[in-house]
Image (tube, rainbow, N blue to C red):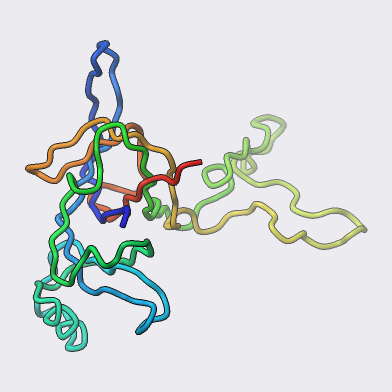
Length: 210
């Protein structure tokens, strides 16, 4: 298995050996707990299901309580599957920590949900420049302008960039370098930014070699 679940703590900066400043994101990567092992014979594919984050007992329904009780762990806030080889190396209830999977210099991919901005116009959503500020156009400064043609084709093409819901989508940032670790606190320092707001949950997977 080549990944862990975590929570985005925030951003900071560190200095490398040459004194260069490196902007980085701090992620609390684990501890995660194996909740189920899926095999080809029983499930049709191999995967390790793991959980991360604490969840209050009263917020867990009966089927989920039985699922966690079978693995002999407390309920977790999120569950994810990692479809990788080597499921025989893990067992239900096992605790997984950051220093078992990552080391300084590794390249990882981080998957998370981008910040949700709700309904936005074309200037913020698609970086339109807006209309002219002169000649009496007092209400056209942030308008999209014409969205169709004249007599032909007399319709709006599919995929036209218009106002709408912005953000809140699954985003993957690839090849982020691990620039530091604090194993005692399960903290992982990645060079650059990762999707989502603070305290948002993310998946950290080792990047595939090209």
